[in-house]
Image 1: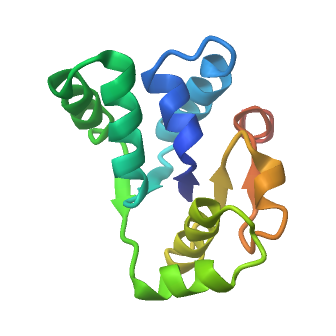
Image 2 (image 1 turned 180 degrees about the horizontal axis):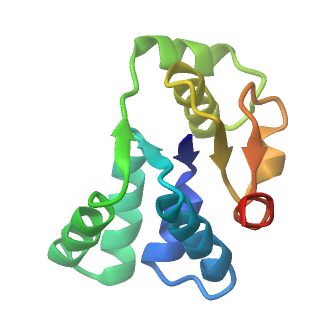
Image 3 (image 1 turned 90 degrees about the vertical axis):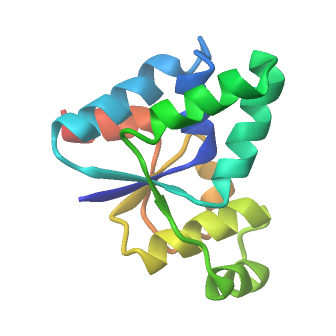
Length: 137
């Protein structure tokens, strides 16, 4: 099974976001235990790095966190077709539209995000971390 994570799920884990970490971490852990392949849109790497650098206070700490996450998550490429799809998508948030396009391109089984409402018009199945845990535990 191929799973594409939304940026917020990864940041919840890396930044130890108390409100959402348990489900986000649990979903990632469960996916790995079950042998599912976890992806992140390559375009999310810059956003994650930027947030980490600001939150952690240094480039080296942000790089270290990024390298750690890359041990378990693969990056799915973003190409011109994904960008063009996102421009035309009914999904109002451009980054989310790119995530949906990447998920379709890579034939992901679903996207895990805690912002399901932002993916109302997605062409890929959407699960929250908690829903994923309930469905696959």
